[in-house]
Length: 417
Image (cartoon, rainbow, N blue to C red):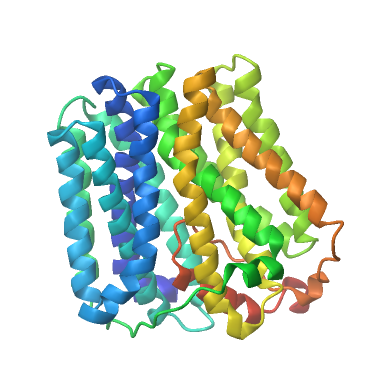
C-alpha cells in the first residue's frame, strides 16, 4: 500500500479534490433548485443529464485520447468542469442546468477514464488491486468531505459554487505536473449484449438496476431533502451517511463474497436494502433513522456493484474480460439515465418519500431476480472463483477490466492459508 501511495500520490490527491467538487455540486443543485422554485420533475431531468453525459463520455473519451493524447484531454475536460461549476449560479434555469449537467457528466467520465489509465499504468500485477482499492477510498472520502463544505456558505449565493470550481482547478495541478508518463491507450469494443447476458444474466440485470439506484442516490437525494425541508446541515449529513456506509461495508462484504455463493449474498443484501429503504416510506422516521437508512442504502448498493462485477467475472474467459467490462459500463449507464426521471415522476405522484420507494422497488426486483437465478443453474464452487476487489460505481471500463484480470490471477484467501 505504501508503494502505491509513493507512486500515485499526486493522482490520488487530485482525484480526492475532484470528488469534493463533484460531491458539492451534486447536493448543492438539489438545494438551490428548491430555492429557485424548480419542480421535482424539472430537477429530475437536470439530475438525469449528468448520467446521460457520463454515458456519452465513456464511449467517446477513448477516441479523443487516441487522437490528441491524455494530457490534452485531461486538461480540456478539467477546464470544462471548473467552468460549469461556476456557470450554474450565473444561469439558474433548469433547462440550462440540464445541458450543463450533460457537459459535466461527460467531462467527469473522461477524467475518470484518463486517471484510471494512468493509475493502471503505474501499477504492477501485484499492486493493481491495492491501487484501485485505494483509488476508490480516496473518491469516497472526497464525496464525504464535500458534504461538510455545504455548511460554509449560503446555497442561494455564489460562494458554494466558486469553492468546488477552485478545488477542481487545483486538483489538476499535482496530476499534470507529476513525472509519470502518460500510458498507451487502446479502444475496447463491448461484448455484444446477448452474449454478455447469456454469460451472466444476474450480472447484467443487477448492474442495470444498480444504475438506477446509484443515480437516484447521487442525483435525487438532495432533491428529496429540499422537498421535505431538511436543513443544509441535516441534508449534508444524510448524503454523507450514504457514502460512509458504502465505504465501510465494502470490506466485510468482500470477505463474505470470497467464502460463499455470491448469488446468495446478492439476494441477502438486496433484501436488506429493500427493507431499509421502505421504512421511511411506511413510517414517519426521525432524523437518526433516516441517517441509518442512508448508511444501509449506501452500504448495500456500493458493495453490490463490486460483487456483481466479481460474479460476472466468474463466468468469463480471460480474452472476454475487456469487452465485458465495456458492456457492463454501458448497461449501468443506461439504467442510471432513467433513475432520476423515474424517481422524480414517483415523487410527483405520491410525495417526496417516493424517493425511498423507488430504491426499495429496485432492491426488491434485484432480490427476486437473484432468487430466481439460483434455481436456473449451479453457482461455481468458491475455490474456482476470483477474489473480490472493492470498485467504485464511477469506475471506467479500463478499471473494471484491470480488476477482472487481477482477480483471475489473485489466489483466494483459503488458498494462501
